[in-house]
Length: 282
Image 1 (spheres, helix red, strand yellow):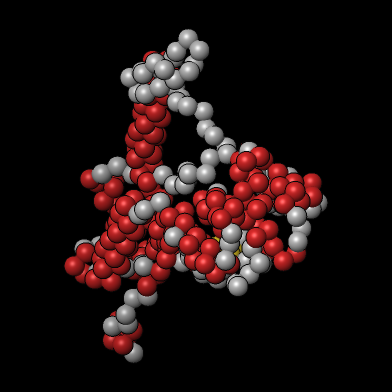
Image 2 (tube, rainbow, N blue to C red):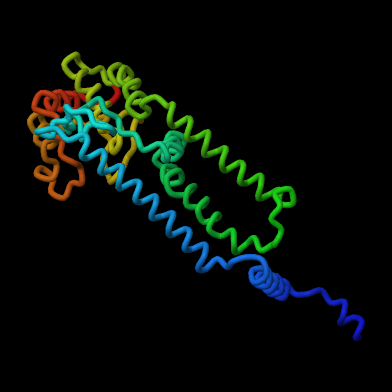
């Protein structure tokens, strides 16, 4: 019985305790503990980074100053600001900062309404949870990469995936707008749109309407926005459409649709004409 007890394999908790005791002994004999030394170094480095950011912001602000802050004076880090933004623009497609390009491209892969949630929330959240959980499900003391093939291959695949998606997101054409514009000739032929309605069809494609509405299968149905393929069959009238575009919540109380009054009367009339001419597939 004594021999049997002596050959019993140590429990995992005992191995971890022994390893921690060896770590404390090594720290006492050869090194310094994480607290407070490493924390002090991290704090100092964080202060240095923040100080550099503040300094660059001050340089940008005060060297690009012009008498009327009109952006005509080029400073060391560029002008304070350039031309004012046009809220009624129909040729600007917003793009994220470079470090979100991989998520930006995921939206091109998961672009159907049923799978957008998977691409924007599901995949990143699962990956983040797996990363946070590493200290809890990987309890081995072995840290050499050659002895940890699954962890090494997983890390390489993650890095490669993010690199490829970032590159493809950076080099992608003005994705959503260009893809929607390509569908405009199809809309014209399928709906048999008259010439006066065709400028509104292009405006509908580039003004971001398909971010919430669908039209002949193009776009996404979000926030309860209806399909507009046959909106013209309701015979609401051009003036009604203009009023609704200018202030949706004024015409339809509680509507989450944003106002498009900044497009101007001319473009609003083009959109209204297009919507009234949309009678469904002819």
